[in-house]
Image (tube, rainbow, N blue to C red; front, side):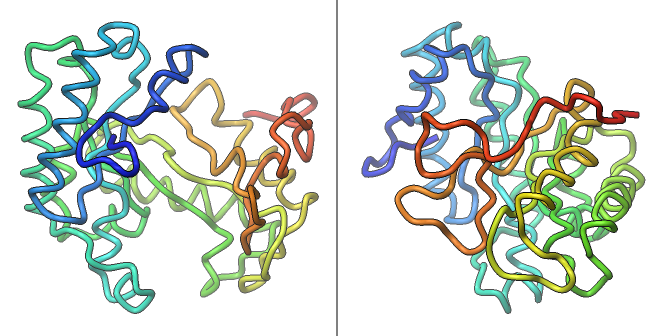
Length: 255
């Protein structure tokens, strides 16, 4: 929620979303302690006051944290992803946000948390499930190198991950808050980045979700000014160019 370079000003992207009528999944950083959460909430409440219903009518939900539970796992720590946040800490932050938006135009907005699918199936994180209105799942079969993850297996790996989360969260709404397949970069396990494979993943995983499940794809653009490795962007360095592959879902089985 906080604009870069400020302590607690709302992010400038809000005005761009209003101008283009773009829906928003708001994110508050939760891995830096209570003082930062206080500033994130201050930015949120300022945005409500500043932009009013032009802003709040676009909000699909509010995520308190992103992959904080993953960061405190042995895998997350080994990958240098700490500090993270503990389950009871996150649950308290979720309540704090819900209290802050009470009696505002955002009072009915779902408040939840975004994390890896492996975090949601870990029973030690039940407090966050209980506190959340929705469950945000980040799932990337591309990174699942301990399993056969050739592109032909990606749809099955993704569906298995989401199914495991649905079984673990007691009927809470499950949203897909990050997924995608790289258009270029390093091979991970058997997963080979390419335009062809990214298109296959879009067709087989994305198209059946769109219009049925709240879904946020990773990502529109990540190759500006430099192309990362791996790169997941649907467009290249120039925002005015066409997507790198057909996104229409035409002639795709969406069952």
